[in-house]
Image: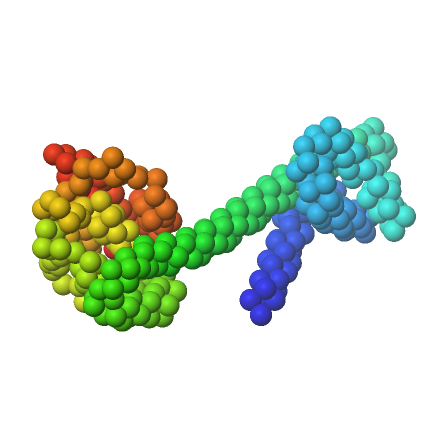
Length: 358
């Protein structure tokens, strides 16, 4: 229905434009009609009609064939040749056809015995008409070319944006599909470790994992979810991780500010929390994980800090699946609206994420 309306509007616009164009010769010639030696003869009317018909045909020939087939394919020589050939045809063909429709009038030349005095020579009048025809031809050519080029550019730009949007949606879908396997891989490893030692914490851990899975399957299919749900999810994740922690590790998660009525991309914080648990816990030496989420009127700040437990194989993996995933999602969903920094100081790893809400 929308496309049909656009076509109707386009047809009306073309008809209105041609109506104004057809009135142009009359605006040019009517002032001359005060001259007793000049009038709108049948031949002149036929010439104007033939000229107009030719110009209409040339306009659509130029915009529908010459521009897409020659100009847009950079066949400059053929295009210029076609335009000037059309101009030469325009200077002779409509005049010839008009002569067949209505014979031209024969005007006396200067020096005749006409008692009313001399009149303008035919050659001068023909020169004026030819100059006018050339000017009007190039007017139609210029307007048509500009409109066609702009329309094609807009169409190309629209196609490019649509393609880019489809590509980004596909990429986001792919990144979301990576979240669940990566998260479950780490969590199942933790539960497997509990099962190996026959810990009584295994069953509660499975129930907690079930709750987390329910959230991921039901809510993270959306582009944005309530921030409250994400806070609850982080709490559940921390509780799930704590089943395997000893009293050597302390975890503090605080939320400051109003979190109601705020939306956020799902699972955008959890990779940093996972990273803290991966590198910041020990059963031998004391360690601490600090997680802080602070909301402001139009932004959210998320900070994570953890002590890096020294180990030969325990190096920060900045190229991990989860961290790279969330960095790319931030680029796609919050372009130029987020700040992500990380630093390593005194055996502590710090992550700061600030997101401007949409």
